[in-house]
Length: 324
Image (tube, rainbow, N blue to C red; front, side, top):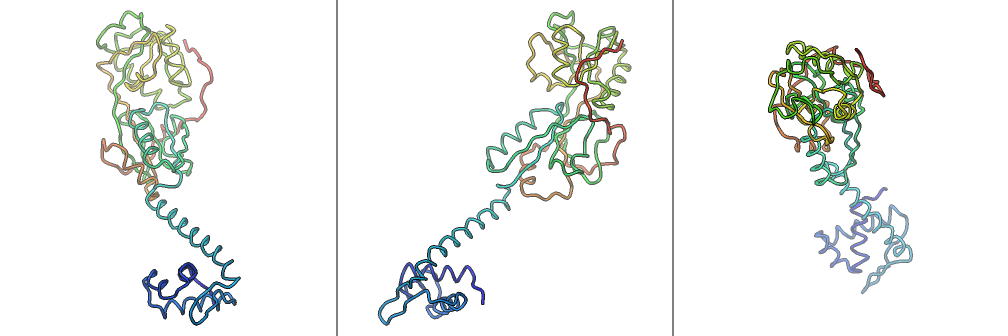
């Protein structure tokens, strides 16, 4: 015969009260039922836990030792129950977050900060994703949610994924502080004609590179030369050093680089979309709690078919190259 937690609770109550009537009242059960639970426990253990005398009840030697373990077991059971309930509420566990370095930092960082403040016992794991990779880390179960950026009009979804648009940004031009156009309120792309362009290489992400080149062509901006880099920080550093201009999204202003001015572009026709993506089948309480903190800038959508242009190489260039 096996015993249950309720049998341990019954024994602990009797052992602490040393009186069946008081123990039964404490547990809100009838005294005969309580006596039967103690007898079943003793039968399962094959040992007498109590010394029953006519006018008193006492613990046997075995009962005194068993009481220590019974209390410990009940405490552990309560702890396990608490863990299960906290996990159900999304207060415990792990959340693996992937992000593009070009994704708008405002909704991304605000959600992370709020989540860590509200549920500090959830482990947050952050991983930077290559720009050209959108949904694949989710499908490969590498991350639980991804903050990605893409250009307007590009299909970045897949049927197995859900996506929520968080922000839409226009392009600015970053120029050195002493540049001839650095004090203008806004410009057209043709005003940059002949300027050296500093931009992310095609091996970083093909669709980003190709769409920007096409946008420049539509705006009559033909760069004198193009300097390719592997990341946004290097891009802005070269511009600040007077080695060209760069087309960047509005949220790039948060990168404080001395010697830079940002100017809106009137005819930039490709907005930068920042979005959150996650697996449609993921019903994790931790993920559900995190999604509740994201702004609902646009309705959640089912993904479309994968776009081959987005399957860009993952490798990045480690140094700036120049293509004349």
